[in-house]
Length: 384
Ligand code: SF4
Image (tube, rainbow, N blue to C red; front, side):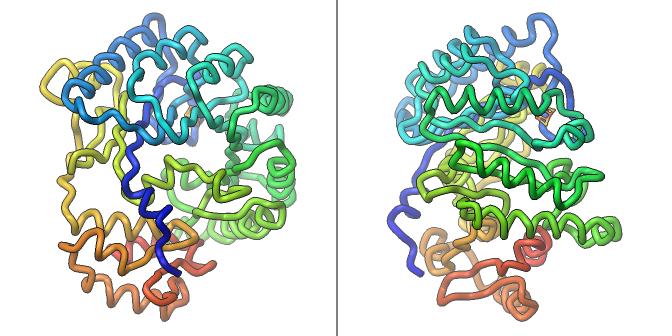
């Protein structure tokens, strides 16, 4: 399989990620930076977001072509329609030409908020359904009910965004195979063109569905692997092809372009507390605290965990993240993108992983096998 020109286009992508760090309450399993907003918090955040965007424009006057934008969190839909429009104005001149995603939750979504997104040019709504089962929602500590979810799905569908995605989470304590199968069927029967199905242990960062072979992992592995395999077999039967470990799309055009570009190690700039960036030859993260982020913005730099990106680092990242994709990576293409990398250092590990049935080679292309997708994180560890 040869690398297509569409793939090469992805490498040149520049995306903007905006982290909205507010949630109505904190779910126990969540590992993202968020806080329940108090009086004045949202206004303080927006003021500093504007300062960060202005600073970026001043320092990068030529960087005006944005391909994708993603507002994530947190819960971006917690903001009022007026604040949503304010956020849109903050990023004027950096509007994306190809895709604009906003994550929303059933408990905070309203028709007016969707109208505000539409007026800004948002093309893709990602709804955090998590489950269609009331008991699972309670076990996850979610604020929304099934009735909120069904209303939110109808509302989003009525606004005719170009793309509509649903997030599911599996592996909550007590969730049966039948319950998860029902979630998959209900998601696929919804008016969506994309479904993400995440493993709870991965979301919580305590272990991984695809993950480390600790004793705890071993004991939880069988049930989570069963649910993961169920998603991998059932969703394609229901019309949603898997293109990444946790992501399924109705057509190639309904894949999430912004995320594809991050897996392909293109460039993106993150705004807001805890937002990560890969930009201008550096990978870095903003402080994971609204106050520290705002303080850092008024100082010299908001950058933390800075990594200088050379060919070795980018080759390694593109290999690890590219393997998450069903298409895998083209090793010859990686070498031509990152000629300074020492690709030979991966040869022994790749050979062992192929012998163990976790990786397979098809000419110059390297892919996870179906079994390998269950162990993607430990494959990554073996390669590093
Ligand atoms: S899972 Fe979503 S809604 Fe829950 S705390 Fe995390 S970001 Fe907020």
